[in-house]
Length: 314
Image 1 (cartoon, helix red, strand yellow):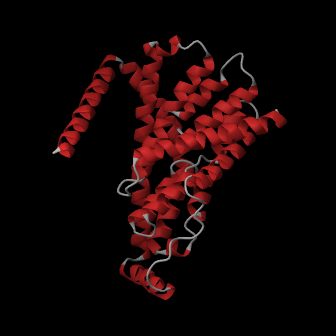
Image 2 (cartoon, helix red, strand yellow):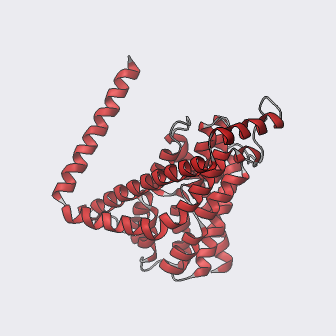
């Protein structure tokens, strides 16, 4: 009975929030259009080219059964480090739903396989927003150091999957039968369709949180914050790209402070990235509470690493 009432409360809260969003969209149509355009531009120019090829390739490998022969901890980390959010979560979600890894293993892998990509950190944030490729490099190195520390803190780096009942030859036979039953064309088509669905979900989250950030900005809440870096940090807690842009434009703070703030925001990811991550983890049993705690510690570890490195390099 308690669960029933709890479910009704969540549904009512979601309905109220949706109604409020609809009212805001009617009240501020120009803001909606501006937010949507910015989000779509960001998605088309940066997110889609970076993620879609990797999503298709990883999905195709999983459909072929190749993923079972790869070290489960290394592959998601490498793909996540190369392509960025939420690639690692997408691979881990697929492994968990197919039964390749246990819930505990999936949570351990997620703690260090949820990362941004080097092109975004070094190119977009470092060289583009902050005007320094060196700062971008510090952010990237600190981000990955924080990710590895996070992995050890949350249960240890998983280099090998838990051994399952059965022999390797049995797994090989199972993979072969899957390929026989489903042609290569079907496997590729399925991976393309699932990849398009995934990047479409990511677009929706970017649009939604870009709109929320803009509404908070025009509401005047940001004006109550005396420090410009505090405003940037608040924006970054919601959407990391917007937060990094705001931090880069802050006047009166050092490059070291900008570097640390941007590193924290990128490693935290923002509510937008957390929402994207949860969509990739649907049906895995991983809760949003765990993801929030894991991303928060990642942000803190990365920020500490960035501060230490920046003391010697900036």
